[in-house]
Amino acid sequence: MDATDTREERFRSTLERLIANEGVTEDALLDLLGSAESVADLTAGTRLPSMYEASLLSAFFRVNPGLLMQTAEPTMGVSLRLGTMDDIHDVSDTVDHATRLLEIDRLTREWGFTSPATDITDFAPSRVWHNRYAGEKTAARLRAYLDFDYLSPIEDLTGLIEGLGYPVEYRNLPGNVHGISVPEKWGEEIAWVILINSNDVWSRQRFTLAHELCHVLQEDAGQVIVDRVTMSDVRPEQIANSFARNFLLPEDALLNTLERHGQIANIEGAAKLVAEVILTYGISRDSAVIALADAGDQYLNSALLDFCRSTPVHEIMQISGDWEAWRELNESRGSLFPSDRLTQQVLGAYGDGLVSMQAVADVIADGDSALAAQQLREAGWEVADFQEQ
Image 1 (tube, rainbow, N blue to C red):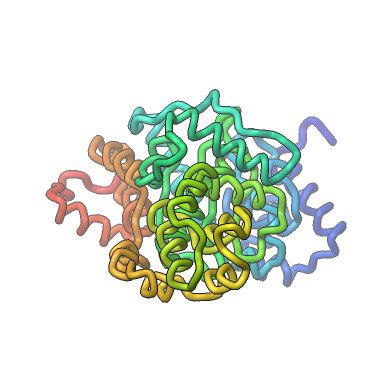
Image 2: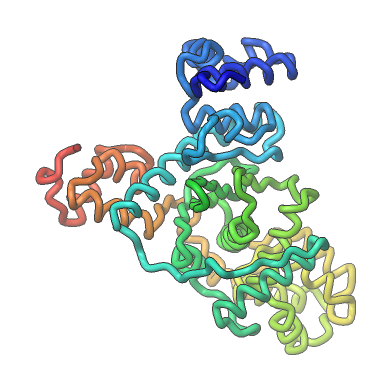
């Protein structure tokens, strides 16, 4: 390649080779990018792709986004596990939103608006070849690193993860997507934002959040990790599932609970056991049942396990007498919650006139600047004193 080639020319040449190798039609690119103008600009090399366009193209062609961007600037990648174009489309708006949050996080941190974080830069996750053991060992190491004992539940998981430096947002995601963790790499530094489906039940949200934390710790970087119902056969997903179960519910805590309950003889006892595990440790029902099955049949026979596996969670809670506690935990289900960490950073920068109302809106109001301004006024801000920059 000629040393005088511009980045745009190198991008055009790379895109041409990918299109030719894959036999991609212009209609397919139009369907992917959604704009004939974008297709024309990118195939002609008149400009580089935006970070969002690069994320879609890298997923579609299954290549590292850095290959497309031809740069060491912040890059995002999209997991090959996204698979089809339909899969890309159903999360494309979410990916676009995540890119904005990552940019705001980076800019506000560069300006000094940061929240205190627990330093885990020297934390070492397990790299053993066995997926389950890698998850178990990483969970045990992190609990020890954070000085957590093996019987106590983790109450404020969102606060814990934000305290590690990773913004967490609860938002509407497609029904078959539980969570997405999105990285941005700048030099040797990788920043992450984690998005959780606000429509999931409380225990599923917690399990997904712990699952996404594992992707961060394992440095599954250069990807957008999309956790779907059908993803359990992929190595990073198996490790993350094992981590989430063992981080939220260590083996010692499970055995302690089982010993207190003793041999379970009927569905009422099974319901009480499963309800206690879910409510105490904030773990999903499916993961709780898997953990109980792993513990062996000395506590719960296969018929009772099948009952716990197939009965809706709300029915289990009704049978166990824990319906009211379950209802209270799910009162906020469906509600949207921005990242507290990122909210504090962007409001600090906005108060000093360093970012616009649109940046605030991207964090607290899903991009609606009028709604963001209204929320600030209701909170006592003199919004008129800080007009858009």
